Image (tube, one colour):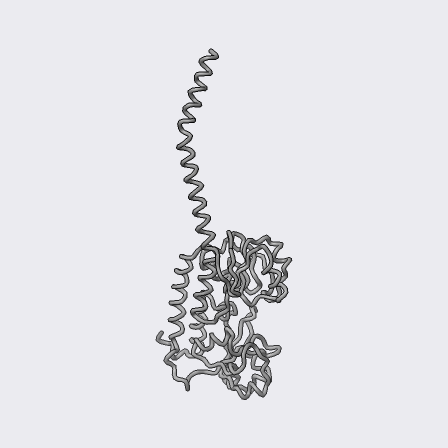
Length: 320
């Protein structure tokens, strides 16, 4: 009986040994496939960001997005479920607002970001303060700075950079193509408008200090793409505008971001002495748009251009 059990055991051992080479081959193929897939992802996730840094983006399964345009692009790429936190300005799509909020993107805390255990940070290049940026750049957590470029080509660069960082290059090309087609169509709406018909539009961030958008700002670019003229373009960035200066610039329209409470209203805006003497006040010409899509230069910028153009020139776009 003992001999019989040993023979059975011996036979089973021989059978297993006969199958071993095949099992090892299958295992080897599996390991090789996994390594190749990992290598492909690693290569796809190596990017050069807005600061000229080569970044190994890694897995990108727990992402913090800083910048409304950055957050929107990640969602447009179908990777919104990877986001674990956003900045205060990221309020679209609605699903994004369910994530933890790390505050205003120019007043960030390193501790607050690291506490969320991200494996990738995708950040607009204007985040701050500088000391926070310096520390974040030195951490083991990969951070990719996304370029600020207020143009159609700039949107394409943003989408393709973020897509590459997420290992979604093909999806990035597809999304970029759709977004740029819509952008180009919107930008052509008022392209034939004669100069004498173009309205002078000034954008204000708020009414407390009347800080207006000059050249090299997203608001200035939106005004131009929508067929307007920004009289503040003689200065760069955001500058306070005095009452005398505003009377001299004579804006036809005041453009502002919504405050989330149904304002600002024309009564709020044109009760301010510095604005009451402008042509815009005489016509109660105030346009209020959602800030995230108006100055973000991302997937919805074409809508912002169209909405502003429609508000400025309803007769021109009536048959559109």
